Length: 127
Image (cartoon, rainbow, N blue to C red; front, side):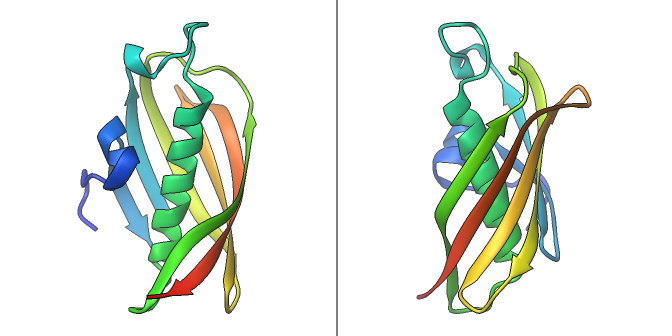
């Protein structure tokens, strides 16, 4: 996948960009703007959930075969501190790949500090 490519779908519409992909890994970049904030003035948790789900899906796709499609079956996000306007880095990686299920982790950082950690299970579906 090319650097700065939009991931497509909802995350692409939000403005996320794919910065890097590798074997079982992916990195997204994201610029938090005012429209991504909640009424408290901090980054909306739904945006964070979208970003970690997307980066982990990208990481899984680096390990799949032609007929396999990853689908999120479970997602847990732990919010560590509130985000604010500015740049985020979102990193995802495959932890364990089974025959039908894959376990991933993701981290969201802003200014070198952790904002969120996520764990997800992806089912590998046949096209």
